[in-house]
Image 1 (cartoon, rainbow, N blue to C red):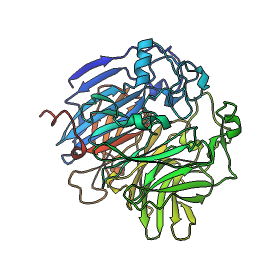
Image 2: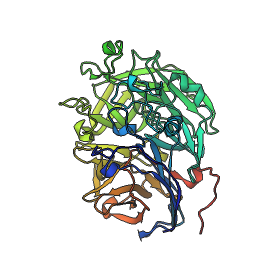
Image 3: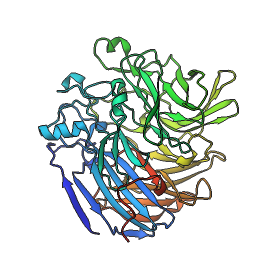
Image 4: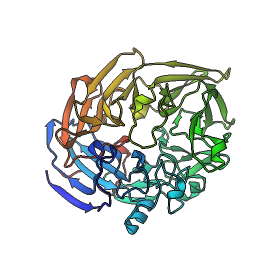
Length: 492
């Protein structure tokens, strides 16, 4: 396995035992290129594209209390082409990253800290945060786009080489309203990027669209009663779906400069159906449902007079023991996220809802070419008890309710695992599920490739990476035809 060390960042971290700075979350500081990776099994010839995962890698000793979402962003990339693959990883060199590199220390407060601990204004709906662009990654207009969970600037990288391109050209137009939240979506039929942002200033939320030529072409306010903390969005052919959940900062305390997260269980969840730019501009329609919080959505579509939405409804948005402000105990099962369906009746204005599965699941993916229209299969991550880690993947059939499960094995942890359709796919599940694994027993990482139709059969290929990587969060797959890179095909 030929490995090129492209760069190495020198950290200032003091050795410790923080669970999100050690173990499966141990940061990486070397940026590598690697070819001729060792493969156990065989890489499918019909798999052509890139798998990208964003990870958190704290470089400098925190000014206060570290939270897993505070780490500097690093992308890990595996390129596939006709049975061959190459690996690369690079830091996302945001403005905050460069400022702290120049200072040789942390300048910004973390999620758990008071904003006043930050030396500079920072980013994020709360303010004072480091825009690490470490939350999400997606491919739009041929390039990788990274984003920050509490709003920041949109950063571009070459989707094949990870060459850093900087802040997107339209970023300055939306930065006064907070920039762009994590979890924008790309419509597979129009190529448009659909995004939202939120802040502590009225109207508190905006929705926007960037076309396939990377031009900001639509940007409208979505007025809310006060500052909220949405995390994700979804869309259909005619609507973008945004939300107003009753889990947000206590507004009375916010007026005193205190950012206390509270759950108002006597208030409903509210869903905004915002017309997309090419749809009739009939105004925003709001629907109400039972109180909850949702971090991530799976899909949405239109079905007659109804809009159908699938995501992870939380049974206990506020854990019984409250939130842990040490940043040490996280884990999806504390909030009880389960597969769930909402139906919004456009004729009556009413909402119906139902739970689809009782198991604690999160970070699910579908074949993204089905975004905005009915899907059948989802690939959901199985939560590891007591930690922000995942033990395996569960395939769920929406039509029959049948499931398949693949577990990574003891001491082996994964994260978001996109479905990668074959370049000549004949059906929704004609493809593979691709994921990076952090193996604590073998002290290494690998990429697993599983047949999307039969994940319980185990991987058809295991590709060993040149180093163990931090587990990370969100990921995406992009077909080779979606990519516009400065580089051509992989070397034979």
